[in-house]
Every structure is written in structure tokens, then in C-alpha cells.
Image (cartoon, rainbow, N blue to C red):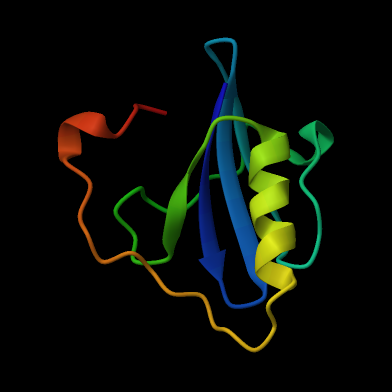
Length: 93
């Protein structure tokens, strides 16, 4: 399983696969929690190299925990890691 996350202001986009089957994409309010029901195969997430990209996560629980920790620090704004990931490490979706 794997999930990619993008943050766009008040929206959080996720795209995932489950046991080698694409789950599609989901979009929720950034204060919410992703569930497997949120993912739709017809919905398209932003491109992987989009500047709103926040990172890769191994599970939905890890992704939701990261969003929860981010909400716990309202005084800090999201800071994007400017270090580029080598292209060969980006998994195909």
C-alpha cells in the first residue's frame, strides 16, 4: 500500500494503491481524516511533481496521523521540503 499527499490551502488530496490495485484519488478538507470510502477511481489527483506535493506515506493511518500532527501546530505554516527526490524513487501510480 502507498499513498501520495498534496496540500492545497484548505484541501488535502491523496492518491493511493492497495495491494497493487489503484484506489484512485480522494479530496477532503485538510482538517478531516481520509477513509478508504473517500477514494474514487475517476477522480484525478495533482501531478506528482506539483509544488503542492507533501510526501509519500506507507498507510492511510500514517497519512492521517501526519495530518493530525500538522493540525496540532496551528501557529506554524506548512513548509515544503525543497530537497528534490530523485526521479527513480518516485513509485508509479
